[in-house]
Length: 215
Ligand code: GRF
Image (cartoon, rainbow, N blue to C red; front, side, top):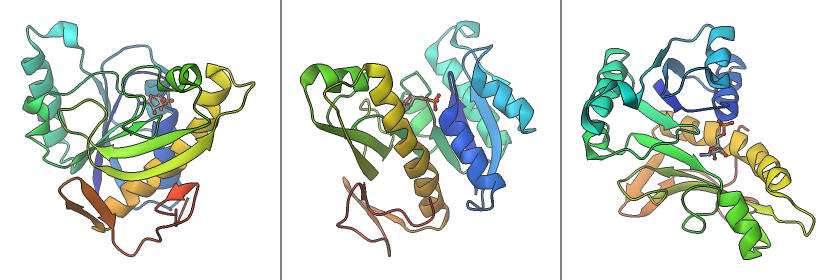
């Protein structure tokens, strides 16, 4: 499956996908990486691993629609079949989403629908949650709230800072995201309204539900 990955920053989730592909655990191709920001670590990773990348910046376009159309065109030219938002800091409108119906996924650092939007880890600490986690979900026009493919739960410790909790959650993100991509590439992800079922996956254990198979 041809992947298009959208990034805005550090790109550690991009790196997890690169490692899965290079390690032979994920039979997909990273066809294009798009960053809406220059000078980010994610692009250094592309250069290091010889991946095609493009900068497409909002400020170079008169409207959000033109900006999104430009990304769609670049992704279509690269024959992208699945778009992965890996730390992409913008909300996509129907202009983009209708070009890839149920073919855009996102990783979010909370158990959705808790703590949507920015700084989900800080929100969990401030709320006093004792369990939080991460979610891979389909992207819809509602922010961080599309049908859930997979979630992992992660404990919040009394001494946690935003940084320590973010780091703990991130190690789980790096596992569920490539796994979800693999399930999608295998055609095992079935969507029934808001319910998503991964065919043949094992449900009912924690911290991952469904349980991971390859990561
Ligand atoms: C991750 O915590 C992800 O869940 C959120 O943004 C962060 C991106 O980190 N959407 P990275 O750029 O993948 O390192």
